[in-house]
Amino acid sequence: MKVTLTVNGTRHQLEVAENTLLVDLLREHLRLTGTHVGCDTSQCGACTVHLDGRSVKSCAVLAAQVDGAEVTTIEGIGNPDDLHPMQAAFRECHALQCGFCTPGMIMSAIDLVQSSADLDRRAVREGLEGNLCRCTGYHNIVEAVLRAAPQMK
Image (cartoon, rainbow, N blue to C red; front, side, top):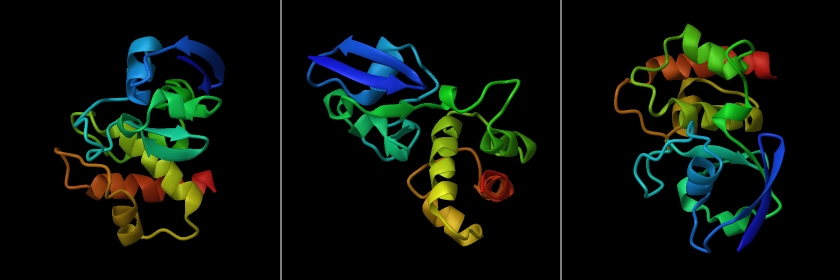
């Protein structure tokens, strides 16, 4: 089947199998490997991207469902010379260890900040509960989100 979508500002028309997942379309067809596959069951959040401006777990979305949509991956929010405020905050707060969960965590955190009026530590922890990190105690992640939030408002 043909799927047309815009990824990180670039329009793509691709031929994919009907059972192709969005995460596979991104990683295998478009070679955007910043979106990670962690669990294949939508439990860990490593594959989180933005679909029409809202965070989704791309391992739980069929490519057919995104026909005509706009997708933003971690590659589309900043670059080494011009980091997104959330990326900069993660770096400044040392909010990562191995880095495997970081792209999905950042994408979820951006959506959380954009969709929340007031955030405190508890709200950030609850808002990110669908993203698992096996290395940290989440303290620095929470601090990074709270540091980036005022810059994003």
